[in-house]
Image (cartoon, rainbow, N blue to C red; front, top):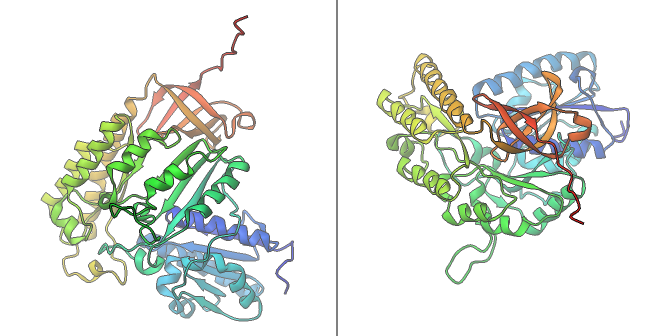
Length: 457
């Protein structure tokens, strides 16, 4: 079977985080360079790749149910290629093959760039497991971007933190920063291709550069995320910059000042806090207190009073008491997040917290999650209120799937915004929109006509 048959079709299903979405885009780029074409319907595809996530239980279960369906199909169509990539692949390794013997390739996230080599081994008749640690090769593949307007750019892979609930360090490996010239070159290419917004990505992006050589006379690392923002800020064609995910332990005033000074950096910060209780933060090995977290938010609001703040929080961590949960509610109430990703704790194999004997019942976790989500919606609605009547700059990304007469995009503060317009004319444009309607997590508005400049003489 040759790898360049242009009639071969592929389908990728992605679970989980932005890092996975970025990996999927790179792997799609490799497949298209190999001559595969995208298939919207997995049942029409000759190659199916599941890019998996271990953060939540249901994501893992979903993978197995999807796999079961395709494994049955493979019994009738043996030429079908089945791949599991990402964090479940890294964690389960050969166990996956024992559970689903129809699988052709199991590959951890560090191997995304090696997809072509690994597939060559598969096409040579091998069943392949690639989960051993590797040094990540500088990425030269062109991702197949899901959007034509916004793009992700990985700046650091892996994570050196050891949070007791998290499998990321064991599945994504140690921190490896890309060199800044390679990052800038990728961004320049995206600028030339017409991408208007770039999100710099890392599991722990504030750690960027710690592993690169070079320090200043005062002992500061030469290559920090702050330095990187200054270095890439003037890339031509790119109008907006974002970055994620931040860790409170490494978030500095110098970084906040850079975001304030650099006009392209959006006033939106995603800084997970996980719990509002110091004892729990200690048990999670997060390395900061809720007081420190509050100071960071205060400092951001000192520089940029209107900045949007989003975060992640876990409820029902082992041993969490009602009083400790209420400390999380208090933090959410005091800060007023624009958006908060919430999850009930689920034990991940291979993590310290999974084997503690003070696990909470599903009923308690579910009750707390519901109460937190209720508060999150109220606070998000309060935060949305400030937009009413304001003129916001919206980067148009797509058509509103529920109303084809409307387009949708995001404000600099990352609020989803809808307004009447033609996607053919407006896609990729920065449009001034007057907000006429506010909801907890989105806005509706009317575009402000661009007035023609009248010559003075």
